[in-house]
Image (cartoon, rainbow, N blue to C red; front, side, top):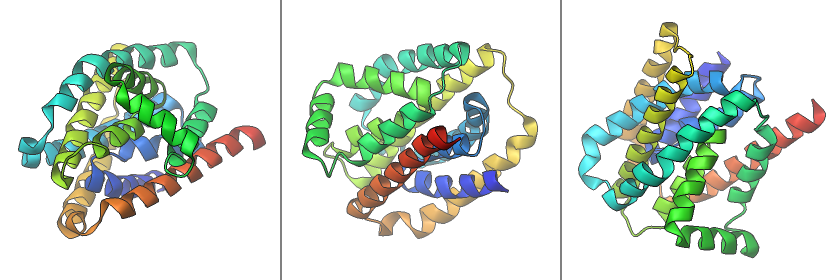
Length: 237
């Protein structure tokens, strides 16, 4: 039941912005005690299904300049560091926690915003860093969102570009996990149905009513609270 609740909430977010199931679902499942790879096995198919629905409808709005960088600079590092994190068995929860807090504070602390602006200015470094972070933590979507939302794009262009990029992330993660010997459970198919049902409802009722300003505030609050919770989990338990 806990997983279903997590999937519904994160699917709502991804339905609106093209990202959410992996970005928010990963730290929540880690908090609930699920191992990193097991969390991926649950979340990746749901994320893929929602993104595919978004791309089929709005692929003409994709910013392919951004997507080209994703494909050639980010994806290789996702594969490398996902392999690394599985083999080395590193506890990434604390890293995730501090990273989430850092991203959440970028609009409230000048020094953090200054660093983020510098990072965004160097395309190659930025996209490579995104790949490293996503491979190790499944949270590269926070950087992806920052990059796309800073671009001069309308709402459909932003969501479509994020969706196709995140879809590509997930496809290569799935391939890597399969090559590592893991198998996706067929009885988790109903998780996909939950994600798709949520998308169909939210896309129809809410997408055109929410503003970018409201999203940014909610996004920052959620990231901050998730980061604090992950850090406290490692300190207390």
